[in-house]
Image: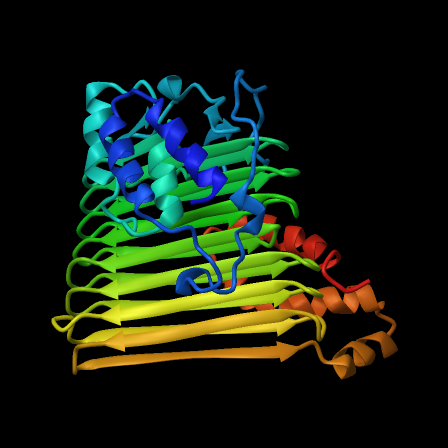
Length: 420
């Protein structure tokens, strides 16, 4: 066991709150869990050396209030956490009709009831850092959307982590039958920070969830987290995940089709500046018939960067009439960039239509030269070619205010990604 994981167990044992049974169960599993090495399949291409003996401060004082990033025409209901502590007065939020929002700490009996309905219902029980989050997350938010509620205003949860700080945050969302909502997870870490941020979504029958996760952490940050979904009958999920590389950055996603006729679409974009690392693992599980899934992941990797994609679609024996596609495309900006990609299908039903594939390509010098001969600088040409590679996924985002905000942000990001 690593020094850091031992400290996780010690810290979890010192917390006595209403989540103590969850913490103790997580601690019991962590004690039986070996620290991942390169021989551990799920961590073969992602080294945790930077975390093994990490010692960062936990927040000891109330952080300064921080505003959520301004996004033109978004008009979202914002809940801001800084170093794991809410700076938004969650109890006084002017919530849309049909929405109840609770703070995870000091939760009322009603909030505890709602949280227990969602917690660990969608997240994979074997995820090491999911267990760490179970053990240490004292702060977070519970979002409960009533049956039939049509929530037009997006709800955005912003999670900032300061340099030198370790924090852990949880988002729990219950979307009632025939309800509709948009939830945005926005994370950013500065300097040598570390955080785990996990979100779980129970999507009711015939409900529609529009979901976004922006993991825009600094180059020295360690960010490990996940977004996990359990879909009811005839429910609809449209999810977009955008991640930057960093010292260690990993996102796990799980989508469970727990009832018939559920539909899931997930687009993922990851962008690595030189020497950065990003790891995206996904498991899409079809447990019932007549479900559909489409997942597209596209990554751009700078010099000496390392991207990892592991995508698996699991179709159970009873999940007949399933339609599922999984595609991963990668663009390398130099011969020093690396991608490890592993899309996989595991099928136990005999009446399904499934496809998967992966590609890795390099920026063509001929394309750059062509643009430069037309008076476009190399830097501008690189931005144009990079954005063209992911533009399709950006344009598919249902919320046009978010896509308009993201486009110039990504263009600026591209300028940092070309080899020196």
